[in-house]
Each structure stands twice: as C-alpha cells, then as structure tokens.
Amino acid sequence: MGTKVGTDCKLYYGTAGSTPAGELTIARDVTLNQERGEADVTSRGSGGHKSYKPTLKDATLEFEIVEDTANAGYTALRDAYLNGTAVALAARDGASGEGLDADWIITNFSRNEPLEDAVTVNVTARPNCDLRNPSWLS
Image (tube, helix red, strand yellow):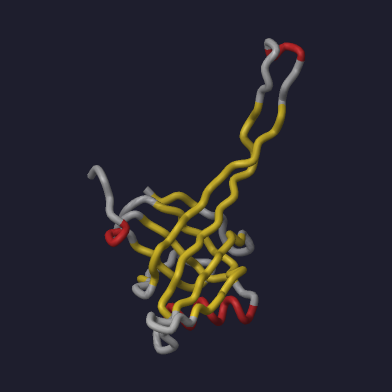
C-alpha cells in the first residue's frame, strides 16, 4: 500500500501491561513523535569530523479527543490522568498497520470549550516501562 490517509489510521487503548484492543473512535489529529538521543563519540581519528552514535529512543503521543463521558476510552484516559496510572495505547497507520504499542502515562489532559464546536480534550502521553517495554508493530 502506498500513500495513507489519516482517517484510515487507528488509535487503540486498553489495560496497561497488555496489548490494547479497544479502538479509540473519538480521537482526532493523532501525532506520534519519535526521536533518538545521540552520544558524541568524536575522537582524533574521526578525520576532522564530529561522530555520533544513537542512544535511547523517546516518544510522545499527542492527540485530541471529543469529550464523551459515556465513552469507555475517554474514561480510561481521564482516569489514567487523574490517578497517575498507565494505560496501553497503540497508534497504528491502519487496522493492522505499523505503529508503536506501549504503556503510557498521560501528562496532559486539557479541555477546550469553543463556542461553536464540540468540547475536546488535548492529550499528551509518554511511555512507561513498568509493566512492559514499547514495541514497534509491523
């Protein structure tokens, strides 16, 4: 498959420590940020150039959800934020596509209340390795 459209992507949620299976259908504008640290390993033998090696990976999952207090995904995210507990999330580029599966802590849960639009919540999640390590799904 070539080009993909955001509406085909999926965000799944579930209990920390397990692969998430419930689709978070109230999600909008999901962004999976990934980066890797770098170690400067420059030496005199580097030919006059800086030299680097990759170190630890980091990720942030940012998305917006429509506030729906009757939705199980909404309450799972809200409760994880309020209680400081982890929740399983997997951001995939299709129903069985690529993406990152991990347990996450919710570090931001900000409600937006526009006059002429649905009430939404901006969510930021960061990986948590207490029960399992993040893994790339392909």
